[in-house]
Image (cartoon, rainbow, N blue to C red; front, side):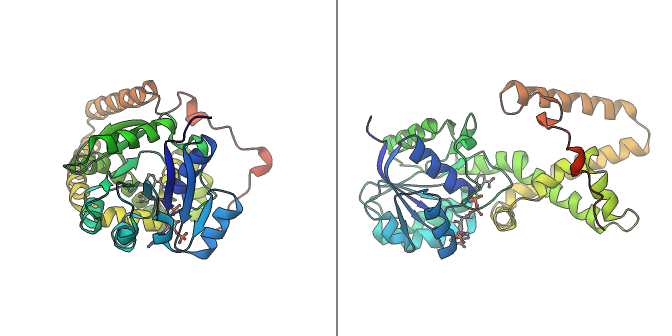
Length: 315
Ligand code: NAP
């Protein structure tokens, strides 16, 4: 068997992303040792039960000792305090990275704590589901998905190259950019869409003239697809909006202007404006399918529900 890419990897945080990385390291033989640490005893015990690592630590400092790669897989708001906690235990030459969905704030929060003898290469896999916790991970999560790395100025090229090789070995494609550009791109492709989903599901839940049971019963007409996104982890998403404030607000103001012009088109019966937009948006969907980022199957390839699963939802 060939040498693993990293003799010892420390995973701090073992939810959806941490466990998916652990499964990849384990099943593809990419790490010699996989040291796992997380905040709660219950999560750590579960990670051990399902065999995600080779050692388990309540103390994050102990997990990172001797590791040549340290990956923070915790909510964005927890990255700074965790970096402070492990700083004194980081090995000479270790690569320190994260998987946080916002990069500017993570760099600002972590960099001041990291000693000069480590390489800091922040990262973000553009892959996920609405599930959380150590049982949510799976081997194929990063397959054919992009991972963005945002090395800070002065980062050794070799460190970025080694981390790139790891993501590629997990099936991902890798691109590098600045943290600021990452945050702007993600605001429009991920953060604002999530906010819209949270908002529309919240609006429907608060309606008085349409009952909640009707919202649930007739959800397959479009609403259901928003609910998947709106079921995403509340802690993670609270942190994203608090830490990517500027970029989200900028994209939201563009969105609000465009929404107002759609409102005007509907009010004035401007069918051409609606038709033109809907034609352009259809082309975007086609490009996503052509780029291999989604299936071309109707309704995302979903099967119709079994007849015995047809329950009348409660109020
Ligand atoms: P998750 O399934 O909820 O797992 C979070 C992990 O972080 C758990 O091990 C949890 O520990 C730990 N944690 C939570 N709060 C903490 C705190 N205040 N201090 C220290 N540890 C804490 O989360 P996830 O979906 O894997 O997300 C992890 C990171 O990946 C986030 O930064 C997120 O932005 C990023 N990300 C997520 C997705 C996605 O779709 N989910 C996609 C790309 C990137 P305990 O269980 O022990 O409390």
